[in-house]
Length: 475
Image (cartoon, rainbow, N blue to C red; front, side):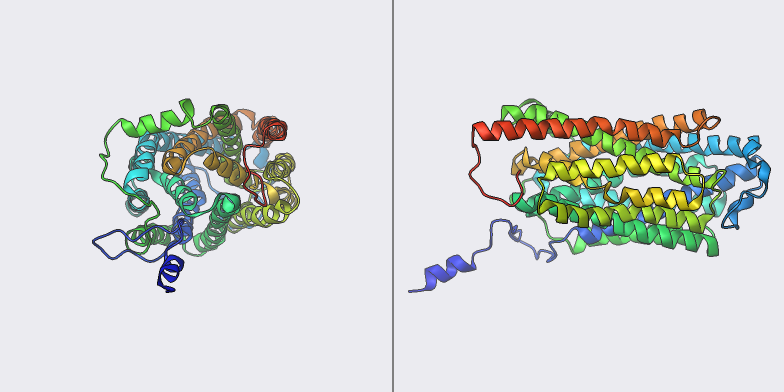
């Protein structure tokens, strides 16, 4: 009889999570739309909030922002010596620092707690909560604009979002979801696809937000940010299928979730995993810190003399920086055909360093866009590191791992804001682009770390052949 063999053929593949008993499961096994919606919301808020702070604080200090309607030019040739403009730049920079620091400390404990918790109860709760928190943050920002409340309420909105996990938890849960549903050999590419979603959403938000803000001011783009966060919440709640195969009821408020993250680094399955986890995390920390630090300053750098961009050009600039996610995905896929993942990451770091050096020296619009162009492979390093970290831990530790990565990323945001937003006002008088040059020098460290681990692995694999599983790209 063919029935047993047919039954075997009909059995679901191991990577496909089973339908939870007792209720109808949502049918979609794709987390990309959710990340797209959350990133659209974040991408609309970021540059627009900075520009709103610039206008509000400028108006309060009697500074007439002459370049708000012009595409180029700061109004007059004496803008270099305008102390009021520099005072407003420094104020905006400091408020960005306060808002980011508040968000980091609020999200530090919630991300670790909820990320490790998702290994037991599933990824969906850890996606619904932060998406709802982002919607609440946007609602608070809208109230500030409608009622002309003090800009300190921006900080309150950020803290509320941080307590529910913030965007960091959405990222952690999305990457955990992909690790749950992908095979090891294709994981780097799947992670890169997820990062490309970040780029596509960011590009849409930047171009749309810049043009929309120019035509209709701030309120309507922020309504779209609110709608995107709400749509992400509803997608996670009603459409996304759970990826954790064996769910079990677990307390949320317990120290065991923090211990799970701690155990990753202190008692891994293989002894060599401990120092690899630490070194890869350090490399990731440095790369993302520079990325966040530069991104924080792009808008301020472009608003100031001599670039003096208006909101439409700022939108195109943000879109160009997001385009690096897509070009890095294409470059990663092509380079993987002939190179090991680590060397693809090294090429990405070279692209990043060169682009930042050009931007640090940019005094004209074409030169600034040339810098953005050279960054075309700059995002190839992070998916490689995320994938390598994921392969160092077991299937049941992905949530804890990506929660710790999200905390590292949160720390990156804090350090980047602290260092770069403090460095920028301090170095305005001798070199406006110095923070970008500083970032390029820092990136030499992760380049050395990745190269050293790869060379060590090559020698180790040559002597002991621990893995017999063939794959197109090495783990």
